[in-house]
Length: 68
Image (cartoon, rainbow, N blue to C red; front, side):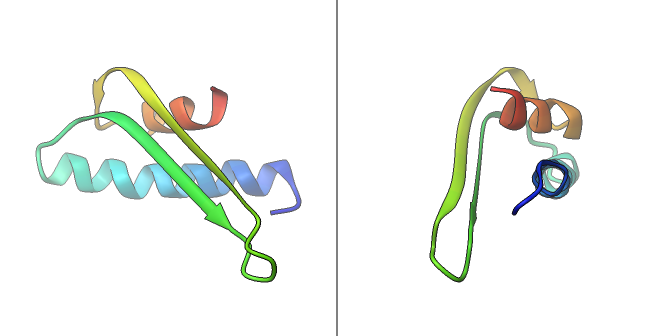
């Protein structure tokens, strides 16, 4: 991911996917993590964070992963 906008879009997409599965299963999460790796050289980005309150909302998951 070369561009910050691409990173934000990917984090949003992953957060949306997780949040929808949580909601459909009637679960909430308190900890979220994401990892992205380049195929060419296996360098990457990973982030894990504890959220303030258990949630299944995309914006809460995304904000926890991207802003901390």
